[in-house]
Amino acid sequence: TQLLEQSPQFLSIQEGENLTVYCNSSSVFSSLQWYRQEPGEGPVLLVTVVTGGEVKKLKRLTFQFGDARKDSSLHITAAQPGDTGLYLCAGDPPAVSNTGKLIFGQGTTLQVKP
Amino acid sequence: GAGVSQSPSNKVTEKGKDVELRCDPISGHTALYWYRQSLGQGLEFLIYFQGNSAPDKSGLPSDRFSAERTGGSVSTLTIQRTQQEDSAVYLCASSSRRNNPYEQYFGPGTRLTVT
Image 1: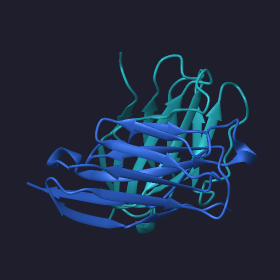
Image 2: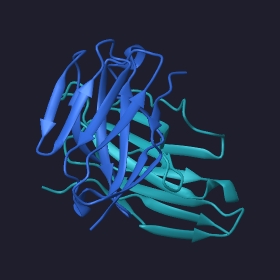
Image 3: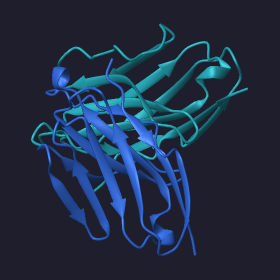
């Protein structure tokens, strides 16, 4: 069974600070997605990375897929209170890549204090 | 357009009772997924429907769990003889095969509490 390990599990920072969340596995994924979830709501897709070494930017968020497609990172620059939420990475295993069945990490809870 | 909707938003039930959770996917999405999420944790895959194909039930934790999808649209997740460990948020997502890799759109979830 493929697993995704996220770190840290909890992060509390002040507004304006930078942070990085990691998503690691010993297995290869066809693609990897990052979601953000707010309390009482379902996860919302932020980005999908497909190619090893790929870097995508979404305003202050930078996503990177590892060269070997086994890991990914999410970097937030100058965090704002609106960035508060649960960040989830989800991988698409090659064995079931035509199904959309995703394996989710356990999530990183981010709290940004004003 | 309308997103994925789920009902009820909250359900409190007594141990041993049966519950039904409903999911209305985005119109035209052929794939539908059910996940379970414990407090502040990641998502656990339960079951997957794709078009008219037989569902992938490989994630269902026990035979007390079942799901159906009628007319390729609305889905119902049924939990029989609920146990306290069934308490969680149940999330439904849908996606279109036109997206590769599949980008999933989630509903707000049903919070189930078994007392």
